[in-house]
Length: 102
Image (tube, rainbow, N blue to C red; front, side):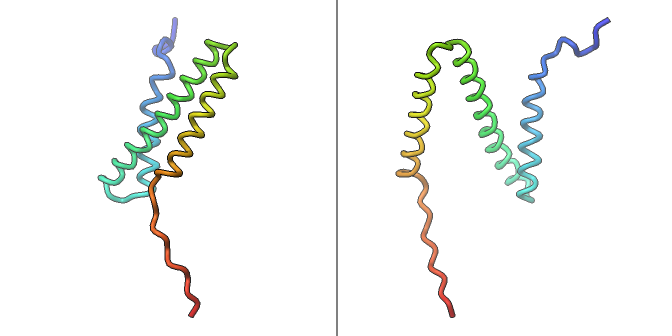
């Protein structure tokens, strides 16, 4: 006799864990529900995007083992290009006034 949920994949728990993780993390930072939900949505997208990128990278590297140096170089160039563009066109912060000693 097989257990009840033996045929269910463990990956069905991932969205639930992602939502719970995002809500708990956001609730530790904010008190209002609108800010908690907004921050949780942002965290969910960032963590989900990261997990998706890692999954795609592992799939591509395992499917094309002879081409991984070229793929790794392409990914490195993309990351460096993104970092360069975000440094040039990123959000500008106002300069804080210097501390004046009284």
